[in-house]
Length: 83
Length: 160
Image (cartoon, rainbow over all chains, first blue to last red; front, top):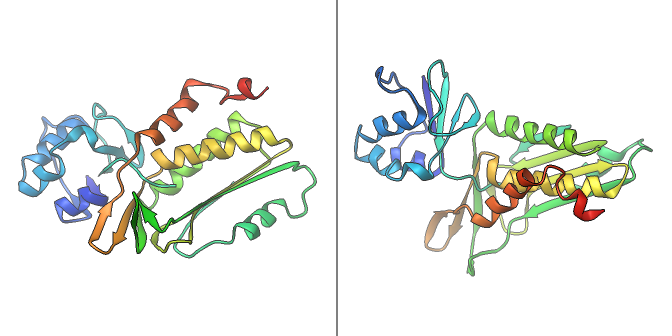
């Protein structure tokens, strides 16, 4: 699946997007954040406070308990500041 | 519904005129323009840069316009949101709502702006003398958006 990062999440990780294949135990968006946070210092920094990170699965807002099975595109970003 | 994202500035009066051109069913037109201020938290800024999630931003705005259209009696909606670098004094966002009567146009415009602030995937970065900072989300904006969920008729009962 494709992961997208925006704003300071993108800056901390150091890239705007990537393709990943998470292991079988990674079932929810929250699991995915925990798994990513263990990959390196950069990811750990980006996901150090997972409760402030917002997520979208296939371009729709979801909560951390949403399942990732079948998702094509998952995005992680800070609270939005548009308008 | 006319929803657009663009880098270049927009002309609010021209957008409003386009929406009403040749129509006689519109009795109320509300035009809201959000403008880049020259200061943030008391400090002067050089510019704002808006990052967005292409594809989702358009879809999320369109979803909220549809929600507004099902909640209020609207005869037209235009939303234009800019991205990229925006200098102080330049417009950032435009919401135009048309209806037969003013209440629906006012309420829908406020609803759309409250949702754009908290649910549309845009992030503002402030550029100033000391570098740059991401703008932090305000809890007052979350509260403004939440009140539409708590009051199914969006305050209509209070207005009447």
